Length: 490
Image (tube, rainbow, N blue to C red):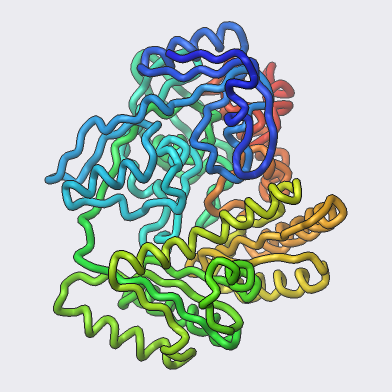
């Protein structure tokens, strides 16, 4: 095991892409599962806070410690087993998505629900119930996690398979290894839309779903068993540019309607507003003049249907735009170029904020489909009023856009935060969520309190203490640590 106690040796672990800065006393990098167990059992006895560190690709400060110890699983990064017949992989939590995909591809398999950031650790992805560009078809990783191995704060290593432990309405009563658990779940219910806001809760829910999206507050995920899919025979990417915003939104609505009817639809459906295109133009000068763009990825089940599929999309696109304003990618080089285009925007946003020494002022909001246009128009109205530069892009197929202000100074940053609050309140009034895919971490706790209210946050704190009675894991993720100690006698 590697132990680092000098701050200058672990500075890179004290931040993520939110630009939140943290502090800690020590960094542990275990190389075996039993070392993780030993670290946590000792930390529990000493009441030493422990923050689990992913790859640093998160946007909400979840891996940023405010005190105590950092525990990184970067050395627990092995493929344990791949079963091509059952289409299952058993892997350790420190493996990157890029490495996972490379290995399963050797068996003509794919983790098609792959979240957008290839360097993210699988453990971090599961801990936030992350999703990505292909979420329009494949949803979040929650759907594909079959089993997890977890270390609790007392050092106990437990396995939680899907389909074994279910709540009786809101009551759990089960035994995990040597441990007996009886507890009631909080009384709120997670939104029926794409959401990664707080603990996932449903009546009669599966226990594994409580640990997916728990942001390192209930236990340390050591490994997971994942469902895989066969590699699609072929696919193409397409970026459609539109002269009119209304044309783009109508095009998207038609594609959504196809999915709702169970008809032919793409696995990815992404949006770029005018400002996003302008922001990218320096790196992609060949972007045609236009108002906005829609990116899609279409899978093709056989070579025989390829021309038919292309003809279908060409016909649909021509109803709203022009084929000479499209970028089609059918070969590997151009596919990588278009995927790079999609990934470039968040990179440039983070670079801009670092250059101007500002923290992220952005939304991760999703709303019910019937209210998407209202939310979109609200973004546009408030953005124009703000007179602050911004970009609006993301997973439009799931009614989930990332609105990002680009403040250049502290005055603009202060104003931006006020507008973000307006966006949050509007989304919640429409039945939306404050976090669709990035989790709550440390920087979005106030938004979650608005979403659920302090009473439900106190219920979350009581639930955490069932699995972490020492109150040391992931402190200040999801809710304030103060709630744990307000409830210390309950």
